[in-house]
Image (cartoon, rainbow, N blue to C red):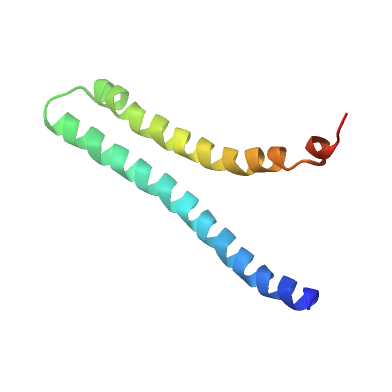
Length: 89
């Protein structure tokens, strides 16, 4: 019974992890593409390329914040359920 439960969990976990990896990879690519398009549009409107890069930097910062918060969730969960928390004394 336990082996059967574990065997059913493995493919689901692998599928979930593959989806998370795909989201991570495509998010990075799409943010880069959006930044370039934004910078290009600003340059077409007459703004210097250097200033356009400065204006588009918050897009990357926001993406980095999102990714950091996603990676912090498992570490917070592991910390809350660590064996050291269960020891009284």
